[in-house]
Image (cartoon, rainbow, N blue to C red; front, side, top):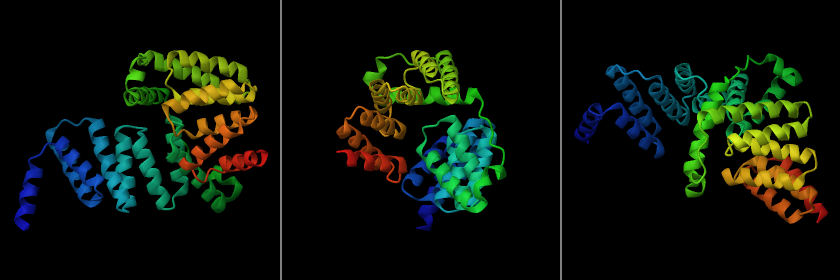
Length: 311
């Protein structure tokens, strides 16, 4: 047995850092988190020895090792590794969420809240970040009272370039995931992604002012540049609801759900539109789908009760 372990250890020492990373991933998948962390550590040493210190490679390895530490309950080591990962490549979604989860487990709720909120600035469609923000809001209200926001550390502003890069990456993943149907459409280029995001932000600003028709115009222009941005559809659906254009809201939510079948906002807003159109059966179907994804969604539960009483 000792001989076999020595042979395996020697084999790992002869592997490249990419092979070690893959081996660590395999151990992680099978729940062997201590072994995974150990192999990721070897991979980090291999990258250091090679002299090719690509920040993105290092960042991924530290983030992966952080995930192993988190699963093993070693939360402080997880926080340290995520911080290193984020120093190397700022605003990485995975290290932000992993550090937030570690802070939450350590009852550092303010720091957890900041990381969850930062992740939502990059992509407002991350269920784990939404759920985490809700939990932290509840905990902080209990601990600090209604003035809990005043005691928060500064929440960093995510640069537009980071949002654009993430949006481009997720658009490409969506295209690959949806196969031939999506491939028939051209993938938006970097310039189109930038224009789409700028127009979406302008739409969001109009929503804050209550100018829903102007916001609809901005979101419509944005979708011409990038038709696979889920939040633009769900945002425009909200505006359509506000101006009582319920059929259009149903259509936009349908487009969002084609891209992400478990999108909470799209399911809820389409249910709202179905209710206004008095299509209670479709409304209940959407709410049941929503509650399968997020069983404790209070707004969904309340709307379901309301609609069931109308039947």
